[in-house]
Length: 585
Image 1 (tube, rainbow, N blue to C red):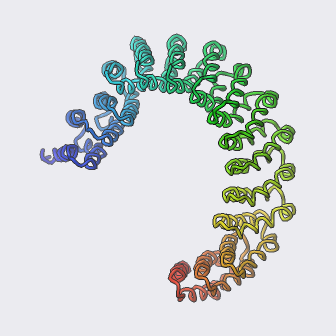
Image 2 (tube, rainbow, N blue to C red; image 1 turned 120 degrees about the vertical axis):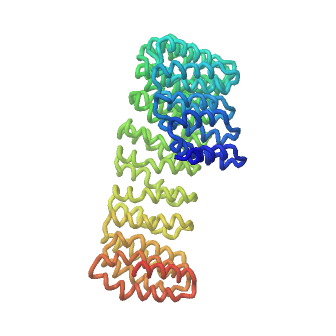
Image 3 (cartoon, rainbow, N blue to C red; image 1 turned 180 degrees about the horizontal axis):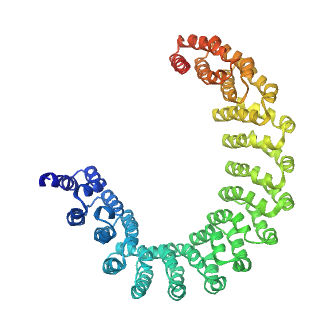
């Protein structure tokens, strides 16, 4: 091969990497694997990596891409026995100022580390870890904290001792950013060490960080507590973690209390049922009554999960009174979070307690002034229905649901519409016609288009639930009557409704009821109606073509109607009718 041709890819890369235009430099980095393939493993190791290491770019975007590319670069260098060559450029990237670049470099180093053998680890990875851990700038020390867990299990016993000591020094670093990073990665590191060292070395580090004077460090130790507690027995957890847990729940910083509240179920599972039953119920009650709305919101989200870990008596005596207080909470976000979760208590409490204690609370939340609260409770009613049955639910909650169906917030009305087919399935035809039939028809005349559209889809779903005969007697006559309404929006809704319902009814019903209305509206004075008629005909043709009895109607009635519309004076009408004609052909 001509040496000049061989040099060509690297020459382009060097030119582009040194180019003033950032996009060209980025492009070159993204094509590194192609260039490495062209060069072959030997030259990639000898020329490409040293070049990349020397020409560390100052543009964060380029560095970020490079840090990501190097993580998947081992195969282009000739396999894992050469993986250590990538450590040097990634070490430099792990010490830059931009956080995203450092994080990506750490991520790539964590991909490469498992591919190293023990001698590579001792010779290259461990010294890298030491250099970063002792770096003058906090940036390199921050990155170092994320690299201990990966290399620990591959290292020799002596190196492991050094690694634990070094990590301990980072946990006590003068710079809060480094302590924060150490707290972030302590849980992952704890999972790798032996039980003996976990108790002797890691728990003291956790205790120190959990008492840090910076709340941004303390709040990160909550997830560490979960990770470490999962490795210990319930007795050991009681010895080492009961006091720190109580301290965290009463922390002066609301951000720490928020983290505890947000992870409370995970914490409870990790420390075991004895501590949960004896000590954590009072802690949970304290969080539910916290003076910060954010903490109460997070705690509300944990109610059903925590209730599964304690007995029914505890729920009724301790948790339910707090839940009742939260229903009238001053913060709408707390009430919304509770509305989303409270139905999860129903399967735990059973039918009697749900009827006695939860139904009044549901009713209260359904009447809340904040729409999201009403919306959240509606969207979770199915869980309650499975416990107490539709009869009880309809007696107690149906009046509230009917009220919400006319809610001034259209999103609440929309949520009710989405829930109607499910309700219909459970109520049966008679009850539905008596209580909700008129309501479903009233939505077709709603002032908001999304509601009218959802109402037409709702009619199709109801037809699928109750059958074509019911639709023929109950819904279709009312829908078709709207086709002659003086207001064009009602006529438009008729078109949408019959188009949506056509696939759910029989071709005979389409022929006898739907088709005459569609052909009448071909001559409507409003262009919007006429082009929607063209779209409707396009949707009706496949339905009618399925049945040999109704197939002739396509040529006899629908095609002539489309031809008439294709000669319309309005551009949109002509466009949609031509489109439909093309589909027919």
